[in-house]
Length: 124
Image (cartoon, rainbow, N blue to C red; front, top):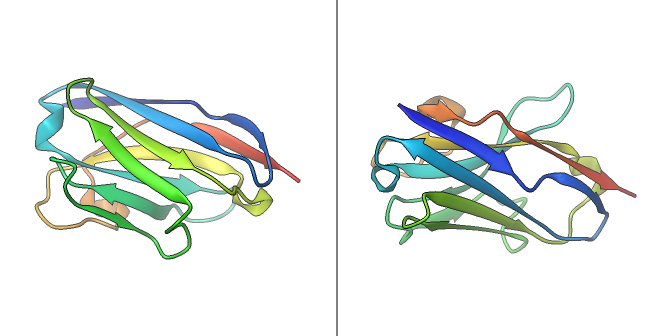
């Protein structure tokens, strides 16, 4: 079992930046690849970014590539999502998730554990 807790959400102006953190506890964090997703009101959960267990491989959705950066610190059992140039239409709840799969995981059902989410509101 892995417990995940997101933090760092809040209100930010359009064009601004924000860094989300996801702290893990439970089973060995470094054995899991990690991902970030978001879900806007009335919409499906969408993939944002992936990072392998070692941090050596990252992958981004096309719509955030170049603006979002995923990273992890296995010594601190934490994964991060640095976001810049945020857009108002992207107000959503942001989730981190852990996957035991070996390949790059971009679908929600490829993840085994989820955090409770952090709300990010982007004002125009």
